[in-house]
Length: 571
Image 1: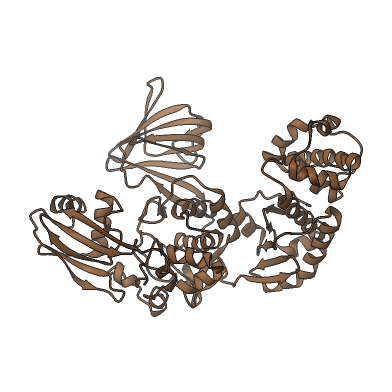
Image 2 (image 1 turned 90 degrees about the vertical axis):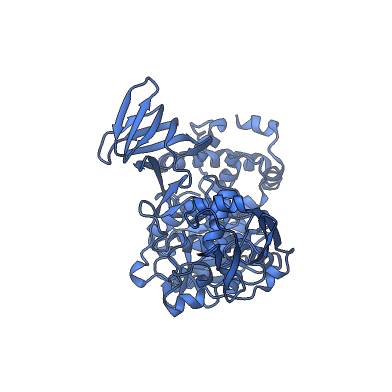
């Protein structure tokens, strides 16, 4: 782990638009149009009124929109006015009865007496947050990986209809709850840098909850904004989904009064009060309603669904595949599926994963002909299998490094006495910037391991710097140790054993860091020197255990915990 170690753009992106963003601007609370918000510092929060202005420490302020300007008031009552506020650090936002903690830079402006909050974060962090919000309990690692590739492809498409930011945090784009999960992190890291390409260009991809047995073509849903070229039309065509058909029934029904519908449709500006009838007047290839007639007004079915969802809740009209009939002073809707129906069906993907299909197979089912490729170059990601490991890379020449990986794993096994229980994935990137953007690792890290995944800088660069063999062996040791460790195993022991078996715990001098302080330094090192010192200390303590009690005993403690009597000898 150390050195030595919105759905408006429906076309396939053009070649001129394939340069990816390393950061993405996300609109926060875009559906609320808040007039005011309270900002409270959690740790190290600063405020500026322009990009080049001096930053000042912030404790707590109330920010209000006033036309296209802002006013903000400090705790002591001192008032200020500005056109923009820039926040950094760790802070809490409170508005409309909701509280949100952020550690990302945020830009606050005003439009028409409403606050406009835009957070900037790495693309991979955004994808992780979207997967945490959009995936469900029925998902498994492979279906989450498929969702991550689709979510990343969607996020990096040219436009989603927002002028002030790239994507919003509502279901108009992709839902973000601003908190992650371990499962979402794992899926994002395992697919970092992967997007869908189709006919030589980066593709715009979509997903939905349940297709009801058949996906929808894009032109069925976003009438008037259908893909203009044949390639995009082929990618987002309507297809039968036998996997979704195998899960529990997706049928639903709802009764809505005319008053409820009038309120929802009037708020969306679709119809005026006084209408009496409602019927489906046009359907698409999949059978979904595409146009409705409400009184004498013809409106898109997707606009109807969104208007009802925003006003009455998303569980009422779950999708556009429905029949409708008058019932008293209201209307009975009976349908199947949930969501717009275009692209990947999450229910079907989860079923495919349950049946043992990998995420590449899942994506091939919903986007046939598309390639999972490097976000920048479009080079396909390839997998090279070895004994106990798989090498993933978008550089064909990296296949030549398979023997070096085999030697490194064999060396790690010999030194530790451990063998892998599962295949270890080694994922390498085209360049150091790509590695940093994809993994969010600091620049001084050559590689790191999470579970059975090793992320590593370009292998050719490590070879040139004569770090290839030691780095790979070091990370394979991490993977082997992590397989044996439990949640209660202290970080100093896990890291220290890797240091000791890597031959980096030499010397008899007791480290300056105490055993009790090593864990904190390992977890929160702020620079390479601090990280190196913490790792050396952990290695020294682990080596003392190995010397005094032997490898077999220490491996048993790795799984069950080091007894207090053994810890006392180290202190």
